Image (cartoon, rainbow, N blue to C red; front, side, top):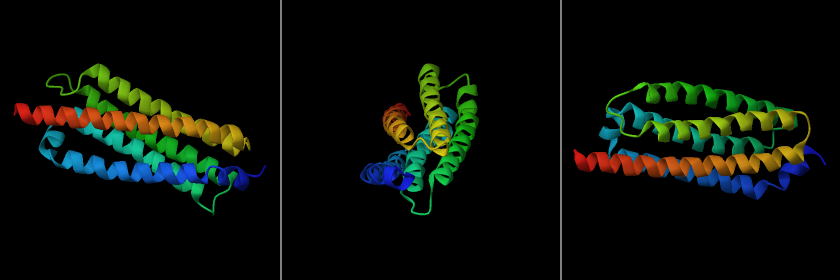
Length: 174
């Protein structure tokens, strides 16, 4: 089975995943903008918001890459590795900012570490899928990518919930 044939079978999934991610990015911005002062004033909240945004953007980019008619197995594999590397870099930089703060933390350290860790693990898996795709094992790569994208969406939605509840609670206390 060729790369094009393998990806064609996943077309509807990637259209749905990309649309869901794009919609949820918009809702994240709306939800956070209602209490933007709290988000800006607290580095841990800001860091979790950035990682959550990155989660949604990774899902959207993967969907776009695999739906692109210009891509092939090697192009898509390399692109996934690049997306994974850039996302990991962003996550590590943002996580260090969010975890470094010791006092006045709005979100507890355990929650932050779990959220950053899950996102980082998913980004690593996107890179691994890129390698598998690059080697020509389309079926296993696409099956694994299903798991990774669903996990990223679940983690991002959970992060969004934590953010909105935390921000609303902080705003109510102020």
